Image 1 (cartoon, rainbow, N blue to C red):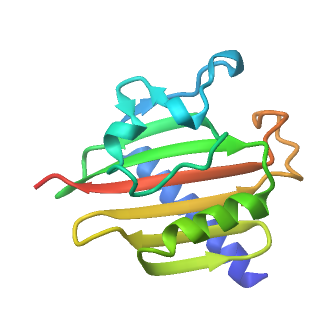
Image 2 (spheres, rainbow, N blue to C red; image 1 turned 90 degrees about the vertical axis):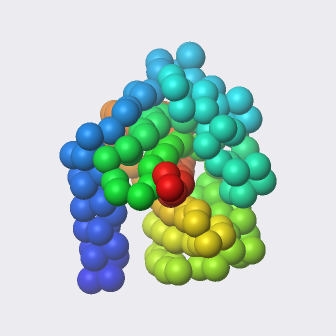
Length: 159
């Protein structure tokens, strides 16, 4: 229980930190205008332009909620994408465990409702993945068909 509280605390802390930093943000569109990940484009940030081709696939069928471009960090830009899916948490978690297995995993944490991992793609690029089970969520802000939330943070060097 203490480990889960610690993981949630760290996730909230990181979210607050990155939200408080100056960033270029694109909010979610109305549900009828949201796009699936195969053709994701949110404002000025296009996922396929950001991620190196074939570096990290996005879970098919995910719907983008938000994207941010954090440009205030020294030495790199962080591209942050948040999605939801109507698929089970276990399916999304397994997908990302497999996708990250070909990279150097720096840290990995999980419990029955949360998965977080950081991996080095190569000597310069890093990816952080968080997957959260929403199946018991009753928050009116969460889309009714959302069972899983996942976040991709891609660290791209600027030098």
